[in-house]
Every structure is written in structure tokens, then in C-alpha cells.
Length: 342
Image (cartoon, rainbow, N blue to C red; front, top):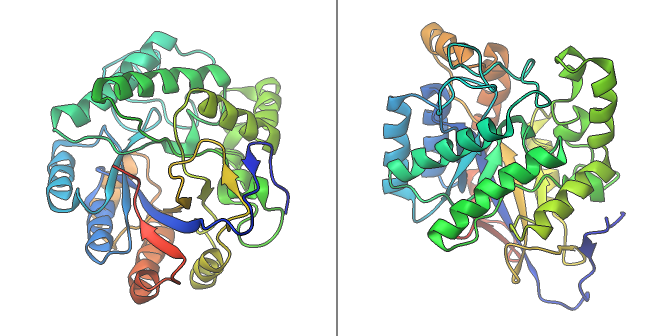
């Protein structure tokens, strides 16, 4: 195993326990996803929820209920989104003329107005403030803000730090430092976002063309992600020690989950800007969804969610989490199932 530059060895005798945060992405867009996440939260197998801020009014009613019922048990975070659905701040260089985001295939970060990005991210935070929900952590849809360009990341961090100053509290961001940067083999290596290059296999179809694709290809390697980690660290925005997305689209979900739990990074590894001095914290990404009607799949597709993956990959992840309820709630003594700190 190779330890990247921003990780250090603890003394092997150091009493540092492991903590795993199980995050469910994309709450607030469709009942297909929301209902599955709610059930997983109720069963105690999801401890963190990432909310897309530009969902519909009904979605926000569900989010408020989630906060009322479980806000003291789970962490509820903002999943920044500039690729799918309507912009919160209205038409801009981020959107088509009708105010809808251009989609992940056409959102050209090289041509957006930085002020428009700042305005939109600030408006997405305001949606939480409007509904009296304190944000426990930040992440971004498709990793488009944290893993591509330094200037885009720095704008995002500036918006986050402005929010931090308003609530007088440091709020963590999802760590773009993939476990696969430190682990070159085994079930923690080559996570989905590394293999697909943080938008990966679709990059050649984007509006960037080959010249820009070469820039992206460099950004997506281990050195590029390490650089982004340093930018976040220097901004003094905390993050989990490891982000694990190897469950996402795994061919054998039960085996993948078992392997991840059994091989969580131990006390030899610690990030230089940790969430906790007492735990080595890993965030495990999940994407649950329930089975639905044709109309529900149609509505989700309009927002940019692929029907085939909703019906197969996401429903399989949901079934796995429920089937592993006893396993996840009775982890070894040195592993805590928990949430982002509040």
C-alpha cells in the first residue's frame, strides 16, 4: 500500500478507532429515491443523506420531514448540482435559456461566468436556510466542482467558507481523495469515480473536445486529485479521511460490501485535516432506489436519472442495505457506524 503525501502514519500503538459513514446520494428529486433512502434511514443502515437542492416542492416537504424525524441521528448535507434539473438562481451561463442546467454532457466549465457559479451555489445553500435545515456536509453531483479545475474548486470552497462564517462552524466537504489513491490493489482500489475519471468514460462526448480532454485526463489521475485535496486542506475545510465508492455498480454487491468493511483503512493512515482526532473516518457512497411505476421512472428520467440504472443498480443497492441490516448494526468493536459531526 502506498501512502500519498497528505497522509501520515500514526504510531501503531495509537488508539484510533474506525468510523464509517454510509451516505445515500440524490435525495429530493424523485419518490423512487426518496422513499428508499427514508426506509434505509429508518432501518439504521444509512447515516448520512446528500440532498439535491433543486428538486420539486414535494421533495422539500420530504426533506423537512426527514430533518424533523431523524436530524439528530443522521447528517443531512447539500449535494451541489449544476448539471441536472432547474437552476435555483434562474437562467445564466450555467443553463439553457429556460433556466434548466445543460446536462452533464454539455456543461462546459470553461465557459461559465464565475459570478454565475457563485450566485447559483449560494442560492442552493439558501434553499436549506429557507427551510431551517442546517447543512452538516457538502458534496457535488458527479464530482464536477471538486475534481476538475482548481479555480472551480476554489469558488466552491469560498461559498462554503462564507456559509461557515454565517453559522460559526466548520462544515466538511466530501473528500475527493479516493481510497484508490492510497490503495493500489484490493476492494478499496480503482473506485468507480477513478475508473470513469470523475465523469470518466463520457468525457469524450462532452463539449470540451480532444484538446481539453487531455487537460481533464491529467486532472483525473492520482496527482491531480491529491492536488485538489491540498487545496481543500489549505482552505481549512475538513473532510473524511477516505471516500469509498467501490460499492457503486459493483458486480457482486454483497461480496463488495463485506470486503470494504473488512478492509477499512486502519490506524496507520490519517489525513492531515481530519473530521475527528478520535476516529479514522471513511465515507461509503450508496445510491438506493425502490422499484416504481412507469410514470415515476419517466419523471426521474426528465431530471437526468437513467431508467435502467434506477431499476437495476439502485434497487439492488437498496435491497443490499436492508439485507445487511444486522451486519451493519453489529460491526466489530473497533468500527463505529456513524454520521458526519454536527
